[in-house]
Length: 540
Image 1: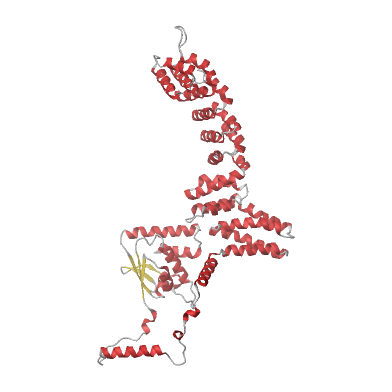
Image 2: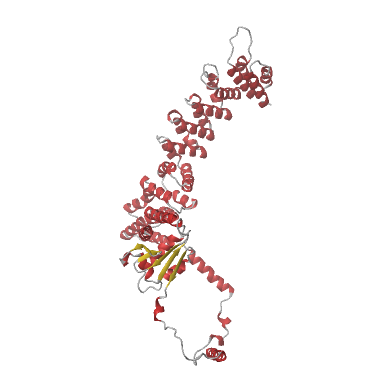
């Protein structure tokens, strides 16, 4: 019950998106869990200063100004029952209703019972006492005999006849043809449509439109200064309530006002132009992203995208820094989509981001570059192949391969000599798949025994297959001496090298290459035989 009091105070002091409010509501929900382990329904009796459970006070507040019991008691509530599931959603509305009832004026038409009835609670029940019932006359037993039923029926009949005749001098609507004064169907439909249109209007947007009209038409400097101040103070409120389309509308309309307005003072023009810059500052945008991550209700992708489309290019760096920090998957997905739009619009900012040292930021930037296939960032990706971590270099290889331009493949050539095995293998595979002849000389130099002496069989196979793909028919002269053992005194070649040469011949796939492979299927070494058979199958 103490936790509920804290939740009541929080609901009155803070907005729903405030972290203090959200924490208080979470505590209230968590406080119900141990209660349901001991009872299937929480029944509380209400007195002037206490809430009691099974005769024991569980919340005592002598001071009426801060008493939850008094708020309930003064409007007639005498018993309050809560059942499991109340903590999911109804407890929040219940606390908000209590806060609203506490602030009602003495002459207000509503009271707590009216407000509770309007909420239509399912997990909250209450018993109440009609406060005027004490003044009603009591029913006492009479010594006179009751009238017979026939007399009672006659009395009712006479009352109905008097009611039908009505008092003298009063006009009855029944004397007229009321259909003459009814609206026809088209008029009713028109009124319904107009009511619907009225209720669907965005009043906040209408107010902003009037402010912008005044800002554009009023040439007095004092009036414009006041209007700019109103807009400046309105922006934090809109961000706090999550009305991102309205924020985007302000930023967009400011550009229109700057083009149309006459006699705008330089200081006013500078102030209006600084609105998007202020929102794009790392501190302001960081607070916005943090509130989005911690909020329970999130904007749609359209709303968030509309806001981010009005941000300045410098906001991209902050977004890229926050993407890996976000814990809410839905917000992260929305922000990732917005980041891709900004990256596509401002690739120069991506180049700037690729110069950083934060691996999380670099990984996110490189992935986006690969997804969008942006050629302007190729030089920055190439520099990361020389200085980035192994994980970053691996993502750079994938991004350069996805971009696939001649410049990207030229930078990808650097992966052939990378110190990381996986980076080398992926780089060579992508170069061979793209048929990039520019990497042929480096791959050819690597397939000799000295170049791959420390490599495992997988890496050797990748290099040899890439050589076969790029060399074509001309590569047979290089591969034949490695595969075919001639002469008794000739130095024997490592079986792994011979097997790799067979796989390379399979990539060439010409009749001459297949002839060499058919001879190798009878080789004494099983590794060579297996490789030759596999190469023949794949070359068909």
